[in-house]
Image (cartoon, rainbow, N blue to C red; front, side):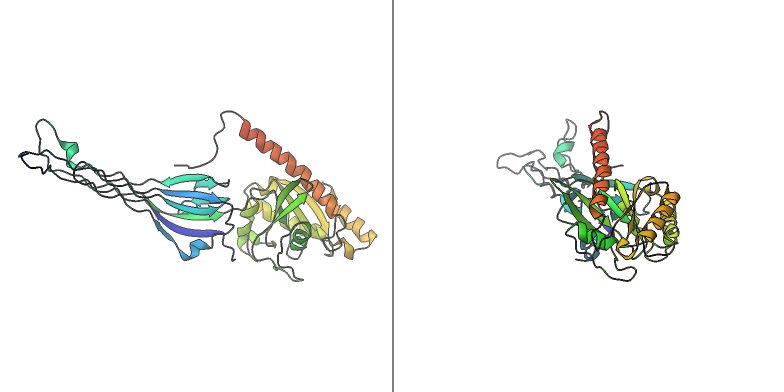
Length: 349
């Protein structure tokens, strides 16, 4: 299945049905009164987040979504049937954005979450509504109200607990394949990973999700390499795992490059909790390990863990460190959701 994380679609809710102009037609009733019913309400456009989807590829082949209109009213004061709602299923983590991509209109972050995005138009009044003491035979029936319509962008931001960042060929995909059942493409060349991958890591009875995104290079925020378009997939992560290829000569420069790109992108990525890993230590001797680890610790001011995705050395210690931060982040979110007076993020008019 191809991965697509952005799509532009046209949405239109259903128009309301027209009101009916009708009069009673009964034998021996010479002056039957009005009996035209109202039109039915148009169908709503509803977004629903589902677990079974992880890409927006379906929206490449269908860009227009229109809900059915309501039926017109009928005689004998019969109201027209309402149009059925149009439910659009999207992956969990999908944002609905304005056409200019500046405003987030909706954010669907939980499976089963439903949002009435566009409401259908009201049905028009039948002539019964206009009967009065001075106008007992009204010949007026209103048309239905038009539904709402707009172009929007759908943007998918993957839901993960930890995000993998680093230069191309830093060993991110290898690490993901070792700690989870994910099977990302692995190769000894840059940009092997062309789209984000998710893996579920299990530790005893607990589990967490790790997202692997394509590697960044210097100038990614200006469009170099694959650019920074995939950084949005780790905005929701509680912790970032920054992997650095230990076989590089200048590991400090590699660290600085990624930190500068995270800061240039924004979105709070530079402020997230970071765990630094010196990867591919199976190819280094003890002296090289110590030298490069010390250089990174002096640059970052944080502890650096050594590991090798190929040999498995240091992987368990890295997972334990990640889990400590993830558990703390989950606890923090649970407390925020339980706090009184907090409104959950949803539709923003």
